[in-house]
Length: 247
Image (cartoon, rainbow, N blue to C red; front, top):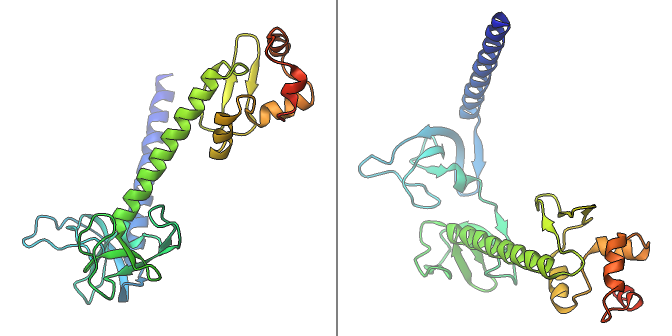
């Protein structure tokens, strides 16, 4: 038993060592790969650097923030890009300007201010719409997108939780929301076939009998749990035939 333990430990250490070797090998390969970026005419290669303590510090060409971690550099120019800035998408659809897609540029042709924070857009990556003269710093645009997504997720989560709590038919607890809603009750296990999207949720606000695809399919096939059918049959305010028309 002890011998087997030592063998397992040795095998795990060997796997860890091989994993570290592969990571180092991958780093070495990346350092020798040259790539192009629209913001610079020469080939770039990746390096790991810590230059924030230099005086004056070397800044990223894309965000004008001191360099740290993995960066792309030009061997013939004093040019650096954070890997994050290098990986920025060349076009985005922003909630702050939904009319047109925004294109990534470096230093627009005229001196302009960011439509988000009001600071200058000179010598920095900017998402711009030339049709509307709309410009936002790349970082402002990405932060704006993250805030919108977080707010939207929070709204949908709160609304979904509220409606399930108020819903007479699905008064149950949510086990998890990662890959759909898994609903449980004492005697039966139920699941929603499709997580409601925002349009579904808005309709739920207007129509208390509209719930989701689960109810639609089970109402049509008459396979709702007996307890649910009995519950509605006992409610004088609800006619099951009227209820079915919502699906």
